[in-house]
Image (cartoon, rainbow, N blue to C red; front, side, top):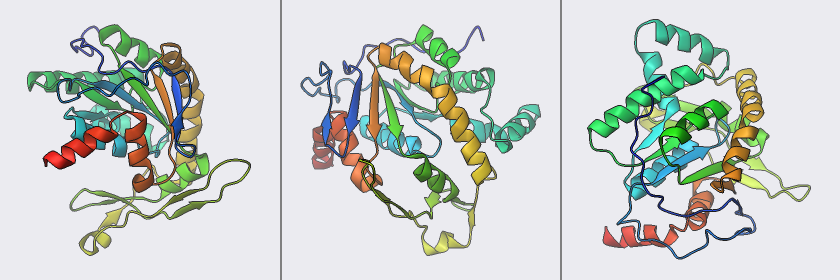
Length: 279
């Protein structure tokens, strides 16, 4: 792994402290050094952010939206693994066995795939990134920290029962490749916890008969993935919390409820309004 992750260092876009954002309470709790004036991100696009969260929480959805808003590449290690699975050769077979058993892909494989993706992006002149699904272990975090500066780590959170339902409801159109979700989630609030409601993301009529389910989206495999993730994520979260870079965000519902709250937490709500006005 001598040549992994050759990424140029860049200055931080924001100076975020460790914080926890409660969408239900609609505020950000202390400490508050990060609550400074909003920056002009049109002049500083090279954000280097990481999105953490359990499988199915929606990292890809929100990372992709922020990628489009800020003009930086969204790099999802899940997509890199799926691309490798679709290829031919021994790596594809090895990955297939790992994924179907609900296990996490090894650090060596993930770092190798990500290295190739970053090198390809660098050759095309890409600047900055939003990483989705990496790092997942302390080893990966330490490798990443040795070669580049991470500005912010966003940790998306949902209750486990919601995560299981979301994963079991995932569907993909085998013709157009778009993803959908047929789960209708309506979790009642209890013991001081807020209710969570998410409408299904249904496909258009032309995709309805072409929906397929991922082979690893079974209840047994999903729960195994969540258990493994929870076991490995605690040290990772503490690592970034100790560096003052972790923002924990409890999703209040689906995209209509969560997206504006996330932008508010990131101090980007006015920027989206400027972009919309410019368009």
